[in-house]
Amino acid sequence: MNLNALSIDDEKFNLLLIEAMCAEIGLQVHSFTDPRKGIEAFQRGLFDIVFVDYMMPSVDGITVIEEIRKTASDIPIVMITAVDDNTLMLRAIESGATEFLRKPVNMPEFKARTGNLLQLRKSQLLLKDRAKLLEEEVRKATEKILTREHETLVILGRVAEYKDQETGNHIARVAHYSRLIAQKVGESAESQEIIFNAAPLHDIGKIGISDFILTKPEGLDASEVNLMRKHPEIGYTILKDSDSPFLQAGAIISLTHHERFDGRGYPNGLMGEDIHLYGRIVAIADVFDALFSKRPYKNPWPLENIFEYLANEKGKHFDPRLVEVFLQSKEEIRAIHALFADN
Ligand SMILES: [Fe+2]
Ligand SMILES: [Fe+2]
Image 1 (spheres, protein in one colour):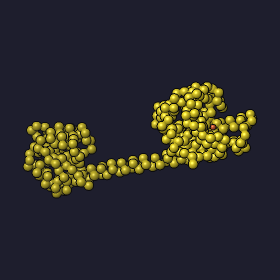
Image 2 (spheres, rainbow, N blue to C red):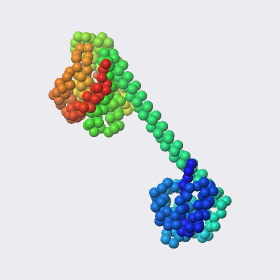
Image 3 (cartoon, rainbow, N blue to C red):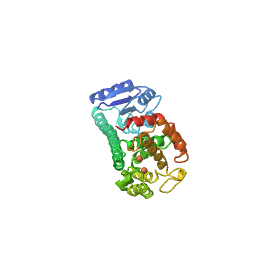
C-alpha cells in the first residue's frame, strides 16, 4: 500500500530532515514551506499523514491543524515542535493533533510514532475497502433475490392462468403494463415495484374454481357465473395473511381487479377511488391484454379498436385518469407486447 505524507515547515532544512526519514520508511512526502500552500495541497490531494511545525511566521501549526480537520477527521496529524510547553500541547490536541515529535527529531522516535500511526491508517483504509466491497456484494445479492421473487410470483400467477387455459405471457405482460401505469401516474419507485410483483397474482383465486366452469366452451349460466365470480375473494383469502408487501398487495389486487369505476363491478360493487389504486390499474392492464391476445374463443382485437374501447369505458369500467395515462403510453405498450409476445 503506497501512503502519502504532507509536510509543512517554514525551514527548508527541517523539511529535508523529514523527507529523509520518510524515505527510510518508504513514505512518499510532499513538502511545503508556506503553510497556506500546504493546506491547499491537502485539500486537493489524498494524504495519509500530515507533519506540521508549530512556530511559523505566517500561519501557526494549530491553525493548519484546524484547517485540515475541517475536511479530514480521520487523517493522523503529527505536530513537530521545539517548544516544550504543556499548554501548547493541550491546545494542539484539542484542535486535532494526533501525535507530537520534539525537535530535534531523531530517527528511532520518528519511526516508532509514525509507524504506529501509519499502521492504523492502513487498517482504516482496508476496512473502508472491505466495507465498499461488502456493500456491493449485498446490493448484487438483493437484486438477485428480487428478480427471483418476481419470477416466483409470475409462476404462481401462471399456475392459475394455466388452469384457465390462458397460456403464454399474459401474466408477465399484465405486470409490466401495471408498472407502466403506476409510473406514469406518479407512484413512487417502491409502489411501482410492489404492483409489478403483485399484479401477477390477480387471478390466483381461479385455483379454487372448478375446471368444469373454467374450461366450459359455451357460455356460463347464472349460477356458474356466480361461482366464477368467487375467484377474487378466494385469491384474497389465499394471500391476505402474509407479511410480504407483494403478497399483501396481491390480496388487494385479487379482491378488487373486477370492481368497476362506476360501481357495477364485483364482488363488492365499490365505486371510484374506494377501489384501491392497484385494483384500478390492474383492471386496465388485464382487460387490455385479454383483448390484445388470442384466446380459444377469440382473435386479438386490432390495437386501435382496443384503445377506442378503453377510451369509451372511461368513468364506466375504468378510472378515467388511469386510462388517460395508459393511452398516452402507446410506444411503451407496443414495446412490452413485443418483448413478451406469445409464440
Ligand atoms: Fe380475474
Ligand atoms: Fe388475467
